[in-house]
Image (cartoon, rainbow, N blue to C red; front, side):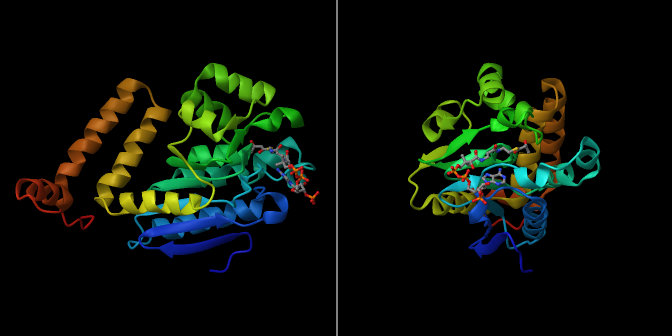
Length: 257
Ligand code: CAA
């Protein structure tokens, strides 16, 4: 399918989605959001794809929700609109999605990166929640995911006083998995995604589901869900193959069954 605001390609077993609105620093308008949801869902349903990378440009992952599009909206428009649904749909993607972040990841851009499962940042990445400058607060999970990731106090400073984080600071506070040179930052994310795509597919997807429970439930509930998912994996052919391969000292041949 031809998209207006994003580019898609498959590299090896990795589906790469690139936000492409250079004139607006990749601001997330409704077209970008619906195209992102569509492209990620297509890769999620493709057995040849094991993991995805969501990238922006060197200058901007995304500078947030599109302020020009939002500026005329009422509370009822925001309530009725599909803006929130798009974020939920991205959250529901089963395969791992790695954000490749360079330049600005502000507002909804920072929230979109946090909605992904891992973040590879270039040395120029800059994370922030500047919504306070617009008289609003983050509306796509930012206050919650930041607090759970970097802790209450830094999250407060970012949300209430537009404190931004450099890539090095973000790494220090556990907001990104690794920092890489600007040149080749997408390749670095794709190569991490390819490593994951070569692993047992069902276990990878169930592992993502289990870790996400840590964000969304109590410890007791999360541990109970993990236990059931762990037990479920004992019904898969990949579990038998993985353990046989270990005992027979050979490489496992994963089928996803
Ligand atoms: N929405 C719409 N357009 C945007 C945009 C955004 N979030 N960010 C940048 N642009 C547009 C600018 O309007 C400008 O367009 P024109 O050339 O047509 O005027 C173009 O991109 C270039 O921007 P600047 O001239 O401002 O470039 P700069 O280099 O001086 O600054 C910047 C870059 C720091 C990213 C600055 O553009 C900026 O602060 N952007 C807004 C960031 C922001 O507030 N994000 C939060 C949005 S609200 C949100 O995300 C809510 C939520 O939780 C979901």
